[in-house]
Amino acid sequence: MLSVLEAKLKDGFVTGNLPKPPLNSPRFAGWKQANSLVCSWIKSSMSPDIANTFAFINDERTLWSDIAEQYGTTNLPQLFEIKREIALVRQGDSSVAAYYGCLKQLWDQYTQLRPIPIIDNEIEELMITREAEDKRMEFLMDLNEEERFKLTGIPKWYHENKKLQQLQPARMNKMTAGMNNVVAGMNNVSNMVTVGETPLNITSDNNGDLQMVISGAVQKGLREF
Image 1 (cartoon, rainbow, N blue to C red):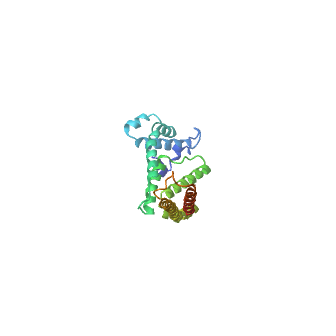
Image 2 (cartoon, rainbow, N blue to C red; image 1 turned 90 degrees about the vertical axis):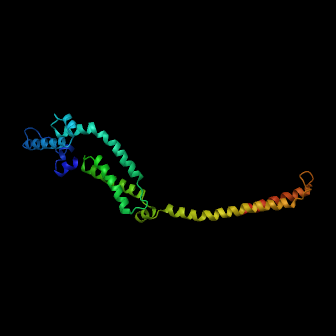
Image 3 (cartoon, one colour; image 1 turned 180 degrees about the vertical axis):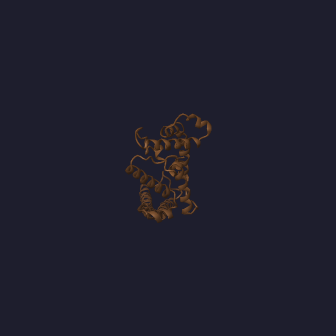
């Protein structure tokens, strides 16, 4: 309905930009005529049972406020669903144009249900700018990485992550080789001990030699990490 009033340059009656002039003003007669016309348009757009609720309200500003008070909260579920859909949109295999078109359709629906209030020109411009920034972030958020970097450039963290990914396999291979050396060293020590040499009959000299061999094997393996 607001779009219809805007097209006929009568939206100021419901937004408050065209307030009621004093009774003795030369503009009052013209305002009253336009006011009645706007009220008629609004009521005719309603179903009869709802229109009857507002049958005795003849001031367009009061009429619009009462409608918003009684039925405006019903927009909240719709706003929630639209916001949820926006959050779930992904580019996937779609083209950038198709992805943007899907988001724009949802943004337009949201704006129709919750338009930016006209309070002050400077504040309105600020709100429009912030809304545009939010839309840009939403657009970039789920754009494919390659397409996003074309628009924003490749960030520093991306290069750092790539370097870590390249270093990780080499580091894991080195750790595996070190562990294999430890195991191999322990196996060599085990093979050096004969069946007759148990913890009860190994001499102190043998114990000392054995400990040195074990220590050397372990240290060699650890140096490979």
